[in-house]
Length: 241
Image 1 (cartoon, helix red, strand yellow):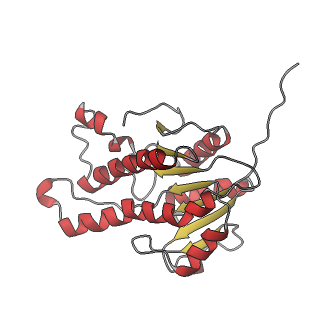
Image 2 (image 1 turned 90 degrees about the horizontal axis):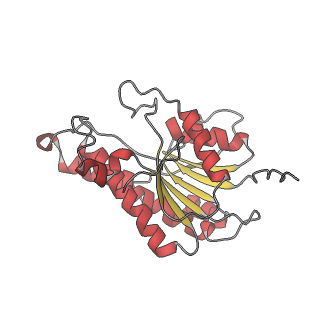
């Protein structure tokens, strides 16, 4: 007798950088599947949010401490997934062009910001929700964050900025650090979404953010507690750390 298919149960997600690009696409895809979504956006964005949207926008510049009102909302939620997506880019591609102050600001947003969002969401993540889903933190990384691939010369000539590569490598270490501390209670992933057609995308990037968002939802739906992962959306192929 064939087994019955299991209908995925909608969950609750916190997404940083939910105002544009991949974060906005993921928020749309999840809410279309009846997920509850808290979308973290820069101050001033929520007033311009789409009319009739079902995302609850939380205004927070994640380069700074969590505002009290946002902290209260997240503390009361039962959170299934946190997606650390917010990032700023850089054009400083050579050592001589790197401005240390700008680099520090980029890392504060892209890396320390992910730490702040995860900290603010931690109580909600560790609170068992109605679906009983194992909680998950997803760091939106890149194959360019792979130290192993760089050591092999896989990206020679790419011309990617120092800040981008440093921040994605650091996010991968955050994934591993979260697993080391919380592996018995929740999972942590680093994902490479592909070459997305966003404001930060490479010239010639052709993948629509909505396609990557649907691929991540697919991974959520089959998530059964898999430990630390670094993989490519779409193929689900593992990437070397």
